Image (cartoon, rainbow, N blue to C red; front, side, top):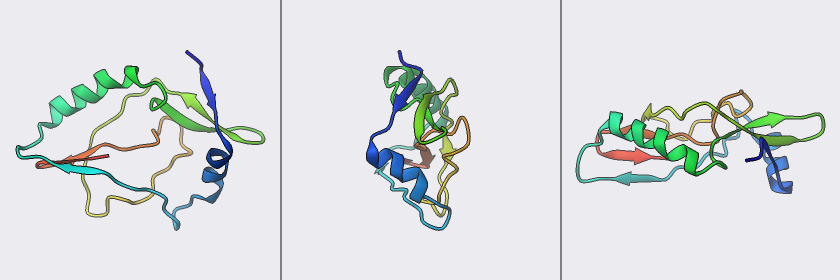
Length: 109
């Protein structure tokens, strides 16, 4: 499995235009009929990540461009917030390019 992945032209442009003032985050959510069990959802995330190596990456800055570097960190389930599409620090090591949140009977990615 490769240690890093090359970005296409749009992927190279995205880190340059994203900022705290200009959020580029979108959200998909599902409302379920039963309450979400956070412990089971965290366990499912941990077990699922090795199957999708392209999601188990973080953004790494290079001399001339960015790339996606493999990450050994685990995705941490977050509690849903009042402002769900706020920007998050993609440039920090170990930050995945997505978040998984839950609250009552809702799961959001």
